[in-house]
Image (cartoon, rainbow, N blue to C red; front, side, top):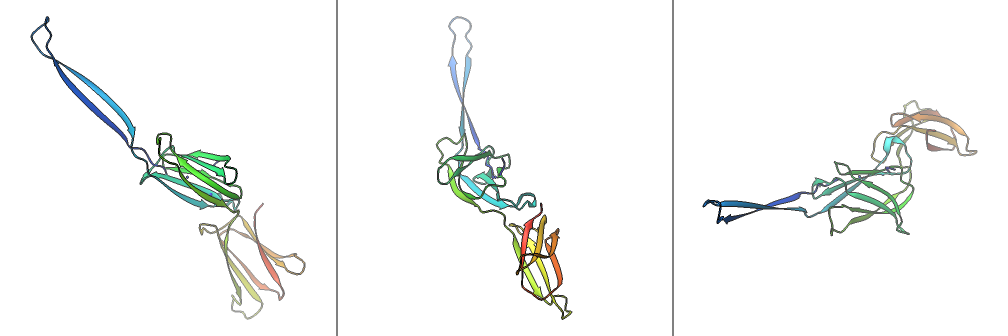
Length: 215
Protein backbone atom coordinates (compact mmCIF):
# COMPACT_ATOMS: atom_id res chain seq x y z
CA UNK A 1 0.00 0.00 0.00
CA UNK A 2 1.25 3.38 -0.87
CA UNK A 3 -0.02 5.23 2.12
CA UNK A 4 0.01 11.24 4.08
CA UNK A 5 8.00 9.99 -0.08
CA UNK A 6 13.06 13.21 -1.43
CA UNK A 7 15.70 10.66 -2.85
CA UNK A 8 19.42 11.12 -2.93
CA UNK A 9 21.70 9.47 -5.40
CA UNK A 10 24.99 8.18 -4.13
CA UNK A 11 28.04 9.55 -5.82
CA UNK A 12 30.24 6.63 -6.66
CA UNK A 13 33.99 7.09 -6.54
CA UNK A 14 36.00 5.24 -9.13
CA UNK A 15 39.77 5.40 -8.75
CA UNK A 16 42.09 3.89 -11.27
CA UNK A 17 45.61 3.10 -10.15
CA UNK A 18 48.11 2.38 -12.89
CA UNK A 19 51.40 0.70 -12.16
CA UNK A 20 54.03 0.61 -14.87
CA UNK A 21 56.90 -1.85 -14.59
CA UNK A 22 59.77 -2.34 -16.96
CA UNK A 23 60.85 -5.87 -17.80
CA UNK A 24 63.77 -6.75 -20.05
CA UNK A 25 63.44 -10.32 -21.42
CA UNK A 26 66.75 -12.23 -21.49
CA UNK A 27 66.09 -14.46 -24.47
CA UNK A 28 63.65 -12.93 -26.98
CA UNK A 29 64.95 -9.46 -27.78
CA UNK A 30 66.63 -6.48 -26.32
CA UNK A 31 63.46 -4.33 -26.27
CA UNK A 32 61.46 -3.26 -23.18
CA UNK A 33 57.94 -4.59 -22.45
CA UNK A 34 55.67 -2.38 -20.31
CA UNK A 35 53.02 -4.17 -18.21
CA UNK A 36 50.01 -2.15 -16.97
CA UNK A 37 48.00 -3.26 -13.94
CA UNK A 38 44.71 -1.55 -12.93
CA UNK A 39 42.89 -1.61 -9.62
CA UNK A 40 39.22 -0.47 -9.53
CA UNK A 41 37.69 0.56 -6.19
CA UNK A 42 33.95 1.15 -5.72
CA UNK A 43 32.90 3.10 -2.65
CA UNK A 44 29.69 5.06 -1.85
CA UNK A 45 30.18 8.68 -0.96
CA UNK A 46 29.30 9.84 2.53
CA UNK A 47 25.53 9.87 3.12
CA UNK A 48 23.68 12.78 4.70
CA UNK A 49 19.97 11.95 4.87
CA UNK A 50 17.66 14.93 4.47
CA UNK A 51 14.02 13.88 4.89
CA UNK A 52 10.99 16.10 4.37
CA UNK A 53 7.44 14.87 4.87
CA UNK A 54 4.30 16.25 3.27
CA UNK A 55 0.82 15.48 4.60
CA UNK A 56 -1.78 15.72 1.84
CA UNK A 57 -5.29 14.73 0.77
CA UNK A 58 -4.87 12.23 -2.08
CA UNK A 59 -7.54 12.67 -4.80
CA UNK A 60 -9.74 14.71 -2.44
CA UNK A 61 -10.75 11.48 -0.71
CA UNK A 62 -10.94 13.10 2.75
CA UNK A 63 -10.09 9.77 4.37
CA UNK A 64 -7.17 9.05 6.70
CA UNK A 65 -4.01 11.06 6.12
CA UNK A 66 -1.66 10.57 3.17
CA UNK A 67 2.09 11.11 3.54
CA UNK A 68 4.77 11.81 0.95
CA UNK A 69 8.38 11.28 2.02
CA UNK A 70 11.08 13.10 0.08
CA UNK A 71 14.55 11.74 0.77
CA UNK A 72 17.79 13.41 -0.31
CA UNK A 73 21.45 12.81 0.16
CA UNK A 74 22.36 16.38 0.99
CA UNK A 75 20.61 18.17 -1.88
CA UNK A 76 20.46 15.28 -4.37
CA UNK A 77 17.33 13.07 -4.64
CA UNK A 78 18.09 9.62 -3.25
CA UNK A 79 16.76 6.71 -5.28
CA UNK A 80 15.97 3.36 -3.64
CA UNK A 81 16.03 4.67 -0.07
CA UNK A 82 14.15 2.34 2.27
CA UNK A 83 11.33 4.09 4.15
CA UNK A 84 9.73 2.07 6.96
CA UNK A 85 6.84 2.81 9.33
CA UNK A 86 6.70 1.11 12.74
CA UNK A 87 4.06 0.85 15.44
CA UNK A 88 5.23 3.41 17.99
CA UNK A 89 4.45 1.10 20.94
CA UNK A 90 5.40 -2.38 19.76
CA UNK A 91 8.02 -1.42 17.13
CA UNK A 92 6.35 -3.84 14.71
CA UNK A 93 7.08 -3.01 11.06
CA UNK A 94 3.75 -2.01 9.48
CA UNK A 95 4.48 -0.42 6.10
CA UNK A 96 7.49 0.04 3.86
CA UNK A 97 8.31 1.62 0.51
CA UNK A 98 11.42 2.39 -1.56
CA UNK A 99 11.89 5.83 -3.02
CA UNK A 100 11.72 6.39 -6.76
CA UNK A 101 14.20 8.30 -8.90
CA UNK A 102 12.89 11.59 -7.53
CA UNK A 103 13.38 10.48 -3.93
CA UNK A 104 9.64 10.06 -3.33
CA UNK A 105 7.84 7.39 -1.30
CA UNK A 106 4.10 7.67 -0.60
CA UNK A 107 1.84 6.12 2.04
CA UNK A 108 -1.87 6.64 1.33
CA UNK A 109 -4.84 6.48 3.72
CA UNK A 110 -2.64 5.65 6.70
CA UNK A 111 -4.80 4.44 9.61
CA UNK A 112 -5.15 6.83 12.53
CA UNK A 113 -2.21 6.53 14.92
CA UNK A 114 1.36 7.56 15.67
CA UNK A 115 4.18 5.95 13.69
CA UNK A 116 7.95 5.89 13.94
CA UNK A 117 9.64 6.23 10.56
CA UNK A 118 13.13 5.08 9.61
CA UNK A 119 15.03 5.89 6.42
CA UNK A 120 18.13 4.00 5.29
CA UNK A 121 19.83 2.89 2.08
CA UNK A 122 21.34 -0.51 1.19
CA UNK A 123 24.59 1.12 -0.01
CA UNK A 124 25.02 3.35 3.02
CA UNK A 125 26.51 0.69 5.26
CA UNK A 126 27.42 2.13 8.64
CA UNK A 127 25.37 5.30 8.19
CA UNK A 128 22.80 5.69 11.01
CA UNK A 129 19.14 5.66 9.96
CA UNK A 130 17.24 8.92 9.82
CA UNK A 131 14.27 8.60 12.19
CA UNK A 132 11.24 10.53 13.38
CA UNK A 133 7.50 10.33 14.03
CA UNK A 134 4.33 11.09 12.07
CA UNK A 135 0.74 11.25 13.29
CA UNK A 136 -2.26 10.30 11.16
CA UNK A 137 -5.32 11.90 12.72
CA UNK A 138 -8.06 11.26 10.16
CA UNK A 139 -9.90 13.47 7.66
CA UNK A 140 -9.16 17.18 7.88
CA UNK A 141 -10.80 20.21 6.29
CA UNK A 142 -10.65 23.95 6.85
CA UNK A 143 -14.05 25.66 6.99
CA UNK A 144 -14.56 29.42 6.98
CA UNK A 145 -18.16 30.50 7.75
CA UNK A 146 -19.78 33.84 6.94
CA UNK A 147 -23.24 34.28 8.46
CA UNK A 148 -25.73 37.13 8.51
CA UNK A 149 -27.27 39.60 6.08
CA UNK A 150 -24.94 38.64 3.25
CA UNK A 151 -27.33 39.56 0.42
CA UNK A 152 -28.11 42.99 1.92
CA UNK A 153 -31.85 42.29 1.76
CA UNK A 154 -32.38 42.88 5.46
CA UNK A 155 -34.41 39.70 5.73
CA UNK A 156 -33.51 36.28 7.12
CA UNK A 157 -29.88 35.31 7.56
CA UNK A 158 -27.65 33.84 4.86
CA UNK A 159 -24.65 31.53 5.16
CA UNK A 160 -21.58 31.21 2.95
CA UNK A 161 -18.93 28.57 3.64
CA UNK A 162 -15.48 28.19 2.08
CA UNK A 163 -13.98 24.70 2.45
CA UNK A 164 -10.39 23.68 1.71
CA UNK A 165 -8.38 20.54 2.34
CA UNK A 166 -5.26 20.21 4.49
CA UNK A 167 -3.14 21.95 1.81
CA UNK A 168 -5.73 24.72 1.31
CA UNK A 169 -6.93 23.37 -2.03
CA UNK A 170 -10.64 24.05 -2.79
CA UNK A 171 -12.58 21.02 -1.60
CA UNK A 172 -15.04 18.79 -3.42
CA UNK A 173 -16.56 15.33 -2.84
CA UNK A 174 -18.28 16.65 0.30
CA UNK A 175 -21.81 17.36 1.48
CA UNK A 176 -22.47 20.47 3.58
CA UNK A 177 -25.66 20.16 5.65
CA UNK A 178 -27.57 22.54 7.91
CA UNK A 179 -29.43 20.65 10.64
CA UNK A 180 -32.16 21.64 13.08
CA UNK A 181 -30.68 21.59 16.56
CA UNK A 182 -33.97 20.58 18.19
CA UNK A 183 -34.38 17.20 16.48
CA UNK A 184 -31.23 16.70 14.35
CA UNK A 185 -33.29 16.71 11.17
CA UNK A 186 -32.07 18.17 7.89
CA UNK A 187 -33.00 21.69 6.84
CA UNK A 188 -30.86 21.89 3.68
CA UNK A 189 -27.89 20.17 2.06
CA UNK A 190 -25.51 21.18 -0.74
CA UNK A 191 -22.76 19.22 -2.50
CA UNK A 192 -19.38 20.95 -2.34
CA UNK A 193 -17.94 21.02 -5.85
CA UNK A 194 -15.65 24.06 -5.95
CA UNK A 195 -14.72 24.74 -2.36
CA UNK A 196 -17.73 26.89 -1.48
CA UNK A 197 -21.44 26.64 -0.64
CA UNK A 198 -24.18 29.21 -0.05
CA UNK A 199 -27.55 29.20 1.72
CA UNK A 200 -30.01 32.09 1.57
CA UNK A 201 -32.78 33.19 3.92
CA UNK A 202 -32.41 30.60 6.67
CA UNK A 203 -35.56 30.72 8.86
CA UNK A 204 -35.24 31.87 12.44
CA UNK A 205 -34.16 29.04 14.71
CA UNK A 206 -31.22 27.11 16.14
CA UNK A 207 -29.11 25.10 13.71
CA UNK A 208 -25.77 23.36 13.38
CA UNK A 209 -23.84 22.43 10.27
CA UNK A 210 -22.19 19.15 9.22
CA UNK A 211 -19.57 18.32 6.62
CA UNK A 212 -19.52 14.74 5.32
CA UNK A 213 -17.70 12.84 2.59
CA UNK A 214 -19.91 11.91 -0.37
CA UNK A 215 -20.82 8.23 -0.50
